[in-house]
Image (cartoon, rainbow, N blue to C red; front, side, top):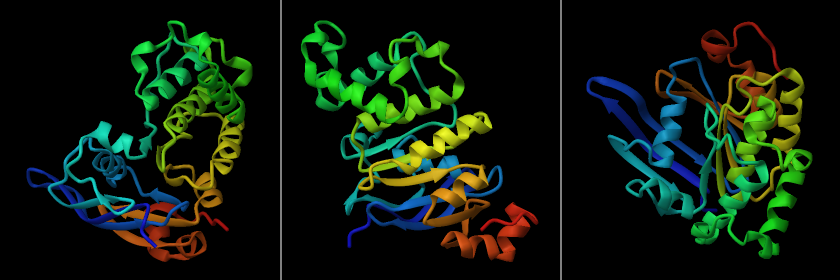
Length: 250
């Protein structure tokens, strides 16, 4: 089976500083995979390499078997690679409905139409409403984004990514800054993501990671320390030493 996303010996250096060190990782279609590691391990740098924000010093990236190492970010998005950000990237004056509609229009290649006359395009509105309802945002679809609780803003960012109908979704610390209650809502949303979408999750919330992921990769100093199912990772003494400490996860 062709991997949904594959990294081969991926390396990134800034002068003499190696921040991504010979990383190889393969995600099967539909897999829920988590990337964890201590601060400074190079997790966000790796996502930036995957999405084309940074160019690797060496190595290859493949998306469903197609080499994308040298493709620009917008071309990777067109091929089905979407991401969220550690700090959300939203339009504060737009409503969730407006923002999701804009993302759908961008996917369809007609973003220049934007909101003008959009009420006549029932299919776009119906798709946007359905997506917001699925993520629990239907009741706030007409509120300015800046007035939403932070947890709902994180959900909206996921909605915008899903509006692009990605085949691979990269979630960079979606639970960062959210309350315990918002975190539970977020996990419910992540658990209900379309099964055909491959997900790579980066987060420091170990409860979220161990409940969500089918496999986990631990990154330390830009290099892969260990990969495996959650039970194996939780029991690995090297992981406990560098990241998990004495805390136990089932």
